[in-house]
Image 1 (cartoon, rainbow over the protein chains, first blue to last red):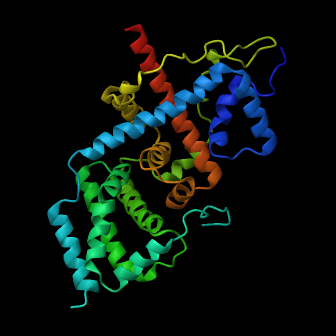
Image 2 (cartoon, chains in turn green, orange; image 1 turned 135 degrees about the vertical axis):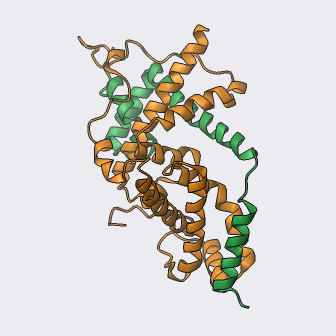
Image 3 (cartoon, each protein chain N blue to C red; image 1 turned 60 degrees about the vertical axis):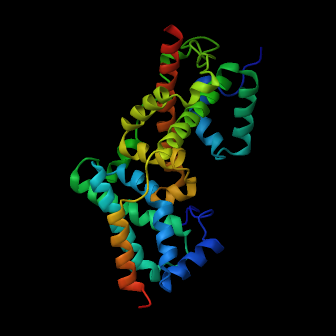
Length: 88
Length: 221
């Protein structure tokens, strides 16, 4: 079996540059060739994405809770806005 | 920003210009909706730098006061959101450094220097033709779909992110929780694109490791 140019240990350090579109064409090709033949590294990328999905999901749940600025703070800001920028 | 091309997608759009003009002419409804739209996210971002919710509320308040005062100085060199969050981050950092809860960001070099690899070397073969290839690959066991949102997994990740060094925690939260673009984060934190990626990479690698550990425990249980 032909060895890919990128080893798994290198792959896991390049993955963010790949996701961010920061690899040059030659490096991107080597990265993607590795990914095409290495299921564990595909799994690694999946787990990175799952991590972000869990984070986003948790953040969505948080945002369903009570929110909005404290009324007193909001009122004070509007008062200050009127004072400094209001048309009278 | 320096000439590092960090501002390509934080240009103001038409809506930004409408908003800025509305604020400049004293449109209170526009200001109220600005508060309501951004307050929660601003509070979360401020909390990355200061110790208490109360302190974060103060920072947000100061930021909106800064917007009222400074709106005439908005020069449309970035999006309005980036401009406003830059004020917020600067206020929060100053306050946080005073509190000494966080390391000043000047310790950034420390976070960019030598750091643990994304994956410990013991998970890869160390000898022979296949040195550097997996010997203990990540398991393909996944959470069932319904559990992806499980509060437990979310809590574990939140704890892992809390434990990150401050710059990594801030970058990952802004990118992956608050949904800021790479360009916006560079602009907010005065980072080059390269350093932003290094911090994001280290943060995401550690967060993934904690999720993998959590998944492993679930399989064993």
